[in-house]
Image (tube, rainbow, N blue to C red; front, side, top):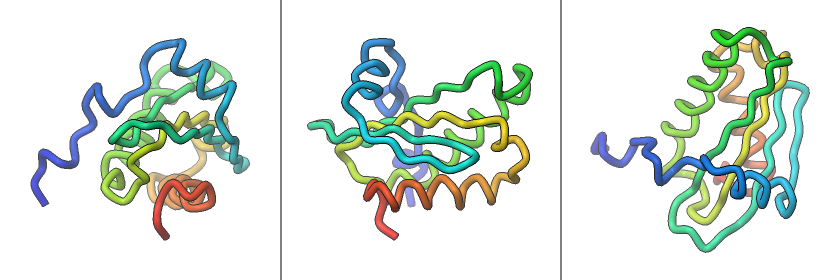
Amino acid sequence: MPAKTLTFGKDRRILKNPEFKRIFKFGKRLSLPQCTIIFRRTDAKKARLGLSVSRKVGKSHERNLIKRRIREIFRKNQISMEKNSEIVVIPRKEALDLSYFELEKALLGLFVRGKLRQA
């Protein structure tokens, strides 16, 4: 697989506050004890990811670790994701107790439940 297809550039990110608000208002929500995802279908040609990590999750280095892990999980699995979706992941403090592989299994399970990814 060419490395270029597995990038996570600005076109794959949800960055602006109005975009987050639109997803929070019109999106569907799925939860686990470790995290929540809010997603909605769009006309976009690529799946997009946004992260919302509260200070309640932990100190800055812990929040950054969670964000890096979630971005990497999305980056590695973006080929199997639905192309017309916007996803916001909201991790909870319990996500810090998970290893990378446990977090990956939990997130991919939520993506399958929301029909954002093929099983």
